[in-house]
Length: 116
Length: 115
Image (cartoon, rainbow over all chains, first blue to last red; front, top):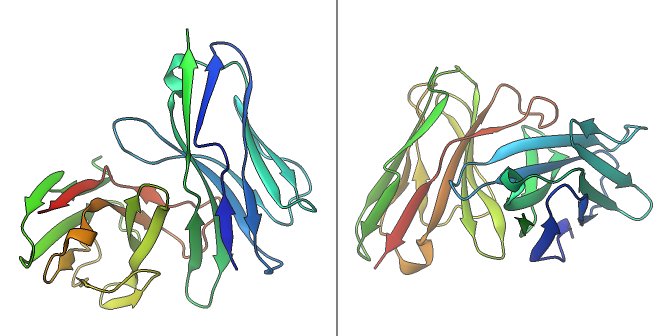
């Protein structure tokens, strides 16, 4: 079954520390994409980072990096030097190519709280 | 540049009533999507549209109807609202059907409460 699992419902991190948010996925499709979105308390969904299943190198975007371990089917998000503004819900998602569009499956989310 | 907007932002209705949630995007993106967000489920796709007058069902379409007479608008209608449709609804748009670097851009969401 195609599924995204995020086992950490809530996380705390000290400001300026690094934090890893876990994500595991399940699919038998050889081609897929992995995303992370941030949802602050205001509610909007903000795209953070993307990794394709055939990408050799781990994706990085500023303070965000995606630790892609294909054999373990994991796509953890690493946030370096946490800031108070990083407090939000974080969703891991997987895209699967279909005939007419890419099906996107979201995980249940992890709530991150950054402590001053 | 407004991007993608949703209205209303908050809605309270009663069981059995018809409700329409509006979505408008200014980018002329071909692809538009409706998701619902429920605790413990993340986002689930309700309907998507590849172009004006082309729509298709997503993961949880029952109880919903969509239309797309114009590229920029993609309204979602609950024909007879039920309590289980209490949720946060997100509209999204994309230039490409291929989610990847060309990602989906999300609206601010509509919080719907069905009493």
